[in-house]
Image 1 (cartoon, one colour):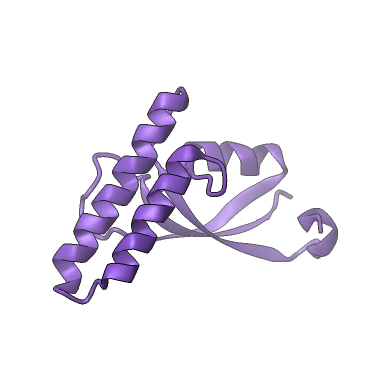
Image 2: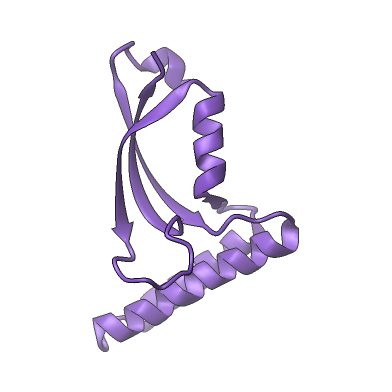
Length: 121
């Protein structure tokens, strides 16, 4: 259903989104997705210390492949998401970066975010 019809005038939507680096073309899209998931895998291997199972590792590699193809998984940049929200009449009222807490990327807008959005008044 359309969020506009489901959401009360004063209601909010919570969005959890993995944002990749901004891209200008299909090659950059693919590269940025691969970079995002490669760094996520490296981070988990470093921080989970032998707790990242073979199945989990394979699942992450599969998500990286699907995201890079843009067919079944589709990631966007933070800037792209902000534009889409603004163009559809929504604004972010609260933002929390969930991952990474350290500087894995040269862009602070790359990572996992929780957005609380409301209709613009």
